[in-house]
Image (cartoon, rainbow, N blue to C red; front, side, top):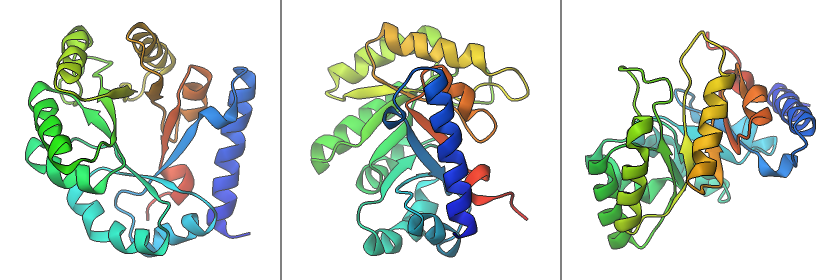
Length: 220
């Protein structure tokens, strides 16, 4: 078993354990391998081990490496998990199967225009600034109903919510809040949890966890 396969099996096992403790089906949870800053040779062993969902932070970086990797393995599912500038919306819609960082009116309008023109509709998540942190992307909790209404009016289907809790504090209350907000707005998906806290996220309703270090190892 390769090192990548061992790491993947370990993470999958921990997700399965957390799901069982929460009385959830493990099949409800999508593991996204965060491949940002990793090149194709670092990614291929995870693909060989069976991983198919990958997350990138930047449109440009993804465009440079994924067309070749997807030509080799066509069933890859690519998620944009970083901030998206409105002027990159067209490129993002062409490249990604899911966009987790819809967070403002201008981006909703740009995506609506591009999706209609391209006839392609990636799965969309609204990113919520769950800890009300100035330096973080995401719409304010108070602004969420209006943004969801605007997306609907623009013809965009929002599948779920995404959040990154504040660093160095207990994440559970933030995950619980995102779960509650998604429930309140009738949204089935919750993208939350990273390498340090994905088990907690699974226990509290995550449908998508974004794991980098635990799968790729610490960067040198």
